[in-house]
Image 1 (cartoon, rainbow, N blue to C red):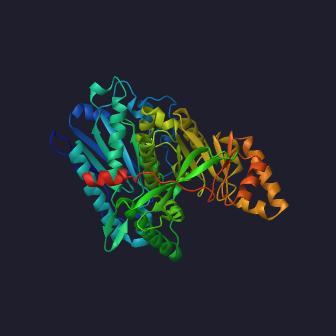
Image 2 (cartoon, one colour):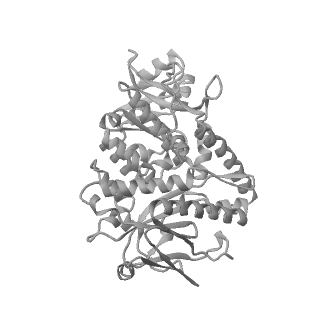
Image 3 (cartoon, rainbow, N blue to C red):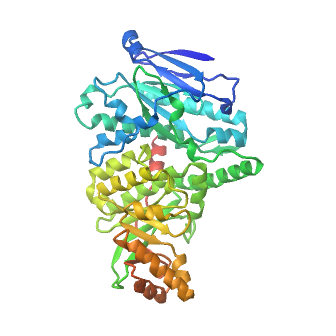
Length: 486
């Protein structure tokens, strides 16, 4: 079956066309979707785009999406951001007449499986309304197909093509789309649902492209049976509590020092610890992060933590700060684009920032992680591998990533307290880590005996309850600022 829609693009109007068959469920697509936009048609017809939406067998030959996923350049030019976002589609000569952005909703089918088809269709309608508002404000058109929305905008103004302006124009537009579609939850029939969304630049050429090749659906576990459904709904409730607290400015950061192992009181940097600040005693909320990882929602929390840490660095110009990001976040895409722009523009901030990679979930493709590490280091940041020896941490990551700091999980200090075998394991792990990174930090230091044991093992840094935490000025969530401005 083929559904065609003709989108008129007059100067003062915009449209959203839903090309899906209303009788199909979101899950009911057994074939890949192909969206074909003809640049030649656009040139010959002026302001008319013909969008042909056709189904074909999933084993047909499509353009390899790797062709659109070149590595981020290690230069500090913001234009390099687009390379990792598929932005080489903007680098053609002559420049394309339009900018195509694909938005992928990774958890839409899982929402349908957990809450039912009517709820999933209601989510789609909400997304269509939000997409329509984006088009009204940015003069674009959009169409929804399955789990994806295709936006088409005028190409960046030609006055921006001589410098980094076009790249910044595109990345900020993509970030605005991300915020408009997914910052706020969708509330339907008593359920509060958060959407896992990603954006990419698609090529504007005479060749068709596979819209199903975009997005991160493969990172989310496939729906299961009743137990899966119950867990998904329970996870979404936990996510609501955590993200509602973030939007209500109830989350804050405590700062735990990473001390020099020599015992002279020198602090290498302070690590941000995410807490709910509504009670007299801040409550750690790190145990809820795996829930967001399972739902594909951890990226928004990670970005808030990184942005808040950068703001703290601005407020405190003489210290170094570190913050954790999930394994799901260690790839350069639109979630990092504006942060990278900030770090490139403020090298003093970058030089005092430590990004700690926490392997509470498996790392994505190792080449993507290496690219992430190299790119952030090129900007001046230091990269730490956190909780080594626990969770999903791997010897491969330790040996290959080239991080600046290795942080060994607290369990090894506890084992070393108990017996000689534990102390031997700790010594061996520290020796291995020192061959992989210049700095090795032992976590879980609770007593002076722990500190002495750790120094004897060869560690260069110590962290734990033995050393008092520090609080700086409370920070306002950048996401909350954005929501309040709407």
